[in-house]
Length: 423
Image 1 (cartoon, helix red, strand yellow):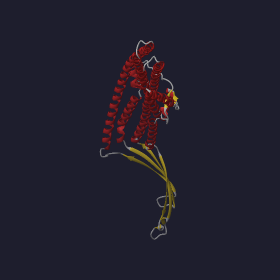
Image 2: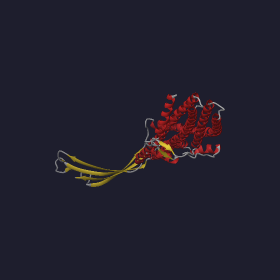
Image 3: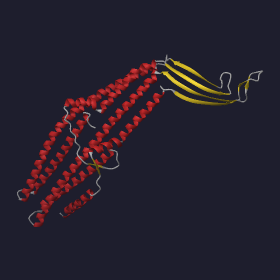
Image 4: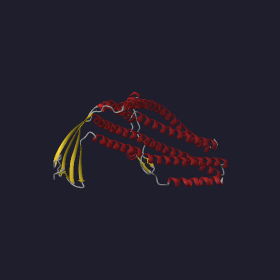
């Protein structure tokens, strides 16, 4: 008995020390989701990928715009070049020349199409950012709800521990007063020790969940939750299905990829079009030669007509058609998944609400039964085995009610996400 009492005393001392540690920073739901968008590595990488696509757009656009280059040349010969039987210098020993070269693509259908396709890729990249943010925020929201539920579970475990402690104190007082028995005291002590272990286990789970939330929102510290988010949806099933087809970011992304692939496949005709460019070149030559005065200019028009390329254009057309077919398949799969998610979420909300009501009713009955058991035990009508059994049932009922509450909240979050209303 002394050993049991010592264990109880040690657990009672450890618990305040654990909870006396510095509490983590608490955030509201909206603030946590905002940090997830800003700091999560996946969201940051998605934004960086958009910048990369914008850089590719600039590279592609350059082929359709005029270019200007400057060139300079110095030539040193071993001696002047003169005409035979004459002193006329036709090529000086030291020569300086320079020119500006202006190239203007006048007709370049293929490059124009590539410019447009790169712009489509930037738009698709922005849709990918939105979808990445959706996944990031959704994961952070689920972690937030998990922390909230585990805090409730810790309260349940603490309440059960306090009830067990009160039962032990009463049994111990009876033994000290000579009206109780040590068997009742030992049973109460065992129940108290078990409850204390469950409190510490719930504390560990809560600490891990806080760390996970901190990682998901991109901060280097555990994060606690401040309030319960308001997750409500009054939409009907048909309305939610329509919303999913138009508002979900993954569906928008799949649809954007189809449009981009269709645009590329449609513009395959530009590979057969001729290219026409104009080159304008003002120059300076010192000393002048027979063919180049000191200053002057020249202009050229260059027409290129692709006749045979070894079958590259036909292969590219088949590749683009296949990519378009793949994008359409992905879009169909995304739509099916979206509608399936909505139907499952609707059913989950219904069943979780029914389970929550039953769990709360069971918790209320178990709490009332515990009160009656304590009164009957103090009156000597029952043994402490009945009290311990009532304590266990009350704890289990409260735990099930907490789990049912979390399931109901998660179900509403899933419904909002499935219909494209969250985030």
